[in-house]
Length: 87
Image (cartoon, rainbow, N blue to C red; front, side, top):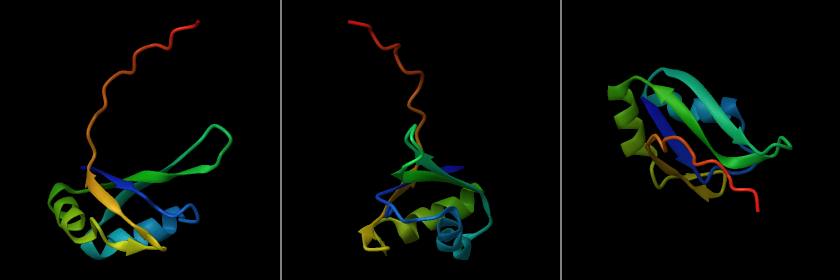
């Protein structure tokens, strides 16, 4: 299952996010989102097994991490984006 992790401090690293989620199960993958210029956007995604993911979501949503209050929930597919219109 893919977990959305929002409101991460801009200094957060993938290793720190793995360490945050590891007590709740095996972390398969961490992706921290960046702008085109490589600047971290403050959110990312963690992939874990379903049962472990639900435990991690319950445990970490609303928890303080690096001075920020985390938003942690099941990631939802936003679907295909509509093409941008040129004006």
